[in-house]
Image (tube, rainbow, N blue to C red; front, side, top):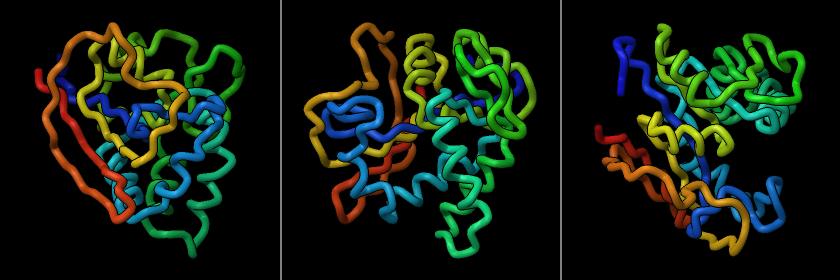
Amino acid sequence: MTNSTGRRVTANLNLTLDGRYNGPGGPDDFAAFAPYVTSEVARNHMNRIWESATTALLGRINAEGFLSYWPAVAEDENADPRDRGYAKWLVGAEKVVFSTTLTEAPWERTRVVNAPAADVVTDLKAADGGDILVNNSASIIKPLLAADLLDRLYLMIFPEIAGGGQRLFDDGLPASNWTLAHVQSGELGEIAMVYDRVR
């Protein structure tokens, strides 16, 4: 499925042991993730996700949340160098924000789209550039999984069972085969994994 430009479509998401990307309290319930997101393994993993990417795809909620946090980190000389590196990349990267409600781009180097994720990604793959990273936005990752357009998955698994919340891998996805490209575990039981799609 890779075209002549060779752009990979990658996705990054944090999950609990029971496969949830948020807790039973709803989309803003990240209590199960909080103890782990600043671990050495998590920070190294965050550094890994953007090193070959030039385009970030974000849902509106993540875009607005990231906007209120990461630009300040990019300017903070006392921030962890990995956090600052990611922040500088995110501020400078081409950003595509999926939204049905935004009327103007919330960031520089950002465009807002109201279109199916698969169509937007197919167009992006036809253009020049590095990897296309779906950055922590399950609302975009899910339709790309359904369309078999993802080439790489960056997953952080945290040793918590949320017991409720939204799952990434819903029933009905097309069957697919993946190979483990990288794995690292941390002292808290967190695991960073990189899986590449076998085509």
